[in-house]
Length: 172
Image (tube, rainbow, N blue to C red; front, side, top):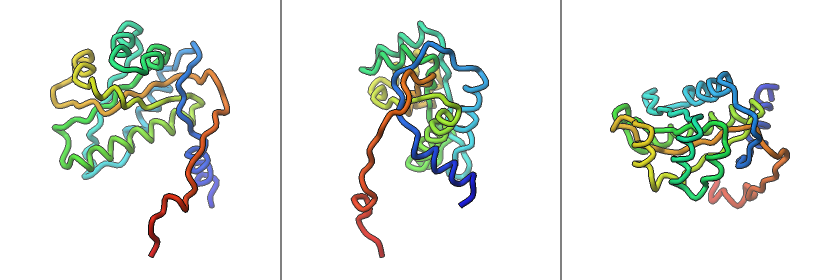
């Protein structure tokens, strides 16, 4: 396996959901790199249906944080990225949602590779209309996740995964 291939697999295996952040700011360059990684995700017909709302403003983050039980994560993250599906750019709902998932995974891997931490908050979707209202998004934009980003407060988080044999139900 190539060195690059091994580095990618290592990044996938070592990435963790980071929910606690230091007070250190996240640079504009790092945010741009994370968004660029998301931008390069695969999408059906290359329609690139993702749209981003980047929020650093503490007052705006606080308002959004009240819409989820994970409010402390949003409040304490130096930056949150609201990831939207632009339904006007879509062509197939399932493929478009899968593309958003690929976009988020790219963003997560970029965040990890930059030495930052992140977590994808989906529970806030119960209030997606309110988030869209706060961020004054176009009507065609539908919230898919809020991605919190910051410098990890703690290092070396552990994670467990099921054995692959538990996940494969059939091999022919």
